[in-house]
Image 1 (cartoon, rainbow, N blue to C red):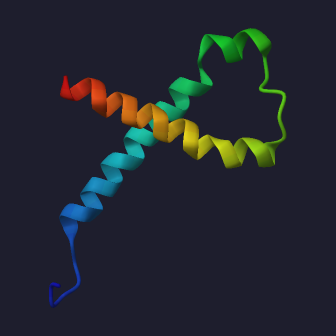
Image 2: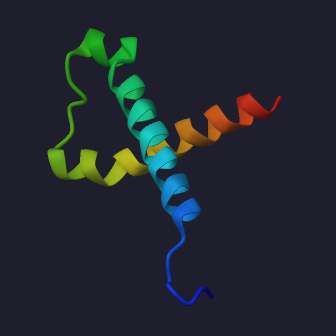
Length: 68
């Protein structure tokens, strides 16, 4: 543990992760299947609960395709 409790490399990693998360979330939102229907047909509360999981899958897919 560092004496000053500062970990800039961790903060930088989280900022990058957030940027990729937001990019994936926007890509999922703009998916053609969503545009055709015009809505998800679920409540905002449900959308908020499932959005992290959807974005996490997109991020994992993004990183797994970058490694190959």
